[in-house]
Image (cartoon, rainbow, N blue to C red; front, top):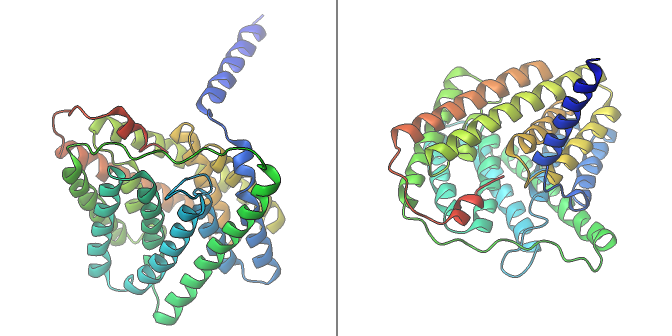
Length: 350
């Protein structure tokens, strides 16, 4: 009978998924996801779905700093990210209307983030959240008053996340030592070349996405910055994992959003579930983590009444552009492997 081998294959597949999902930090994730549900539900009740989606996205990003240690305190990373994202959202929205200025500054931002990635992990993480906020805001350009409004919404989302984490941590983790931030690794010798490659990749990805008129074009520079590593092989591995995760998360979440037929409650529950998964999987396999993050963003867009089909197509296209450019720049700028500590490579993971 073929049933037994089939059952065995399914069991092996499930074991493989469980292996890729390790470490799975369920309890840590539980303190970060509630703020997202609260912001989305409040925005829906007030009839401000777009604003609530922006605030929830900010809270989503800030939440990843809940278990990072910086300067001897766990709050510094979250507060630093929230403040930096607020400023980046204002600047990105303001400069988004000037393509050349936005392009040049995007490249500079990419170089700084890449430089910090090999210099100080926790400052790098905060800078990365600011860079993402800058890229996103640039695609929603407006006059100063709109830039101030967007920055204010981002600040509200970040503050809500910090306050809820402070409350929930006392209930869920009283007496439990949370993982501390990793110490900075020794500086590898390819610091400046990696920053240059990041600047070129981000600027090119921004330019191409803008020329193609992609509605979610900010995924191109964001992808280029996220997957680019000092080594070509690491960049290839991360690029393929991100593409697989983005495509899978996009397809699954878009299908669910279409089936939900604008039922806000179902979409909020789905966003809560996928954001919880993203927090729990942030140190697991990059493809699974990316799928959860992408699905969460799709639900934010659906709650903001943005077409799921169009956003999925543009997001995948932008991811392909950013990943392809990063791979091309990494290949053209490749150099002989250098002997630098494995810890410096490992800490640039998800």
